[in-house]
Length: 289
Image (cartoon, rainbow, N blue to C red; front, side, top):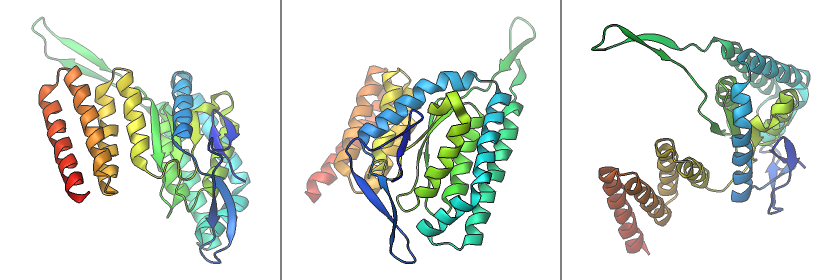
């Protein structure tokens, strides 16, 4: 059975639950994976956050070298990975091989860019004569990569490639229908990452049934650290997924919690907007109930 990958180690879901992966062509079970829950999400994000400082300080050329080593391992196992993708997704083998090549090519592109991130030296307005500012580009922290089912390897590469190359750490959540090939690829990359294995965590495949929980949790992490501006985009994504699923009560609770945080930060106008939207959610929820 495939496993979660947290803190550089393969582990089962804390609940012990599993789910089957079905071959869409034959309807046969081709494997099983842990059905992760909120505790697993918290463990993966916490691990990635601990690894962030070390990975961000790693020389960009060293990050690129490690990524290329991982990609060499992926290439060496390409037939095995492509056959897994065929079984879990149903696409022809030549298309699966092509997708894997596309993944490797894209990742190599981002690895090549790792040492080419440049800042800027910009003139600034000043009443005391000429002055200049130095703009530095820095990694932002833990990145959540939500991977779709249709091109799971290619689209995973477009998320984890730039994030890792720039010095961020990543938590990957593959689609519930195509987690097995993703697990194989992440495993090979992690072998190459060596002491930085915490930089890349994997939560297959239902990290939670509700993506809102992931974003809400990330928002709480940034909010608890006093960085409300970085928390707000995650809270907004959480609200979006809650409303998409018809969970108006959950959306209202999230909006109400954000409103409280904004009040504490002295941003009263923004807090009022969230509070009024929460009331509308509560009212609609009550009418439906």
